[in-house]
View 1 (cartoon, rainbow, N blue to C red):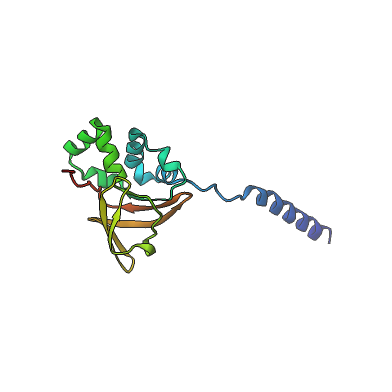
View 2 (cartoon, rainbow, N blue to C red; view 1 turned 135 degrees about the vertical axis):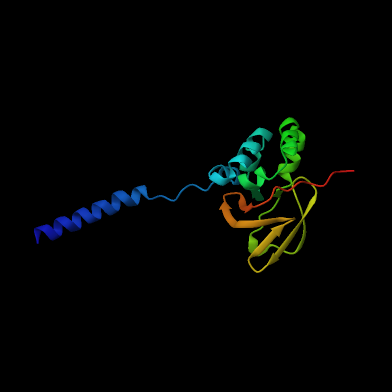
Length: 162
């Protein structure tokens, strides 16, 4: 009997201690969510270089179509070089990947959506298959405190303004 009381006491004590430690992680912004995702390290670096980190921590809501490191590797070196030398161009390309609203994959309506950059992107959904322009969403609906992140397989280049 003594051992069962001791075991119950230890179980309750352990539960109280662990319960105090088992807090839910604080919600992360879309910028922090991207930074915490290893396959988005190039995007995170470019967001930092463009000075957009603090903006993407603001309340939003935002939808970010986040190209993977492999997507950036597929961009011609000449284009990446131009982005590294022209902050305005870099901001234009990055904000072309952001909608000024929260759009989950289930919310996608076929047709255009206006980006933060100002140009529209074409969204398409058929079942769980979702695209934005020519990019396929490979991982959808990563929740953030100020929106949602969708990982895409292609870097989107905005249309040239005339």
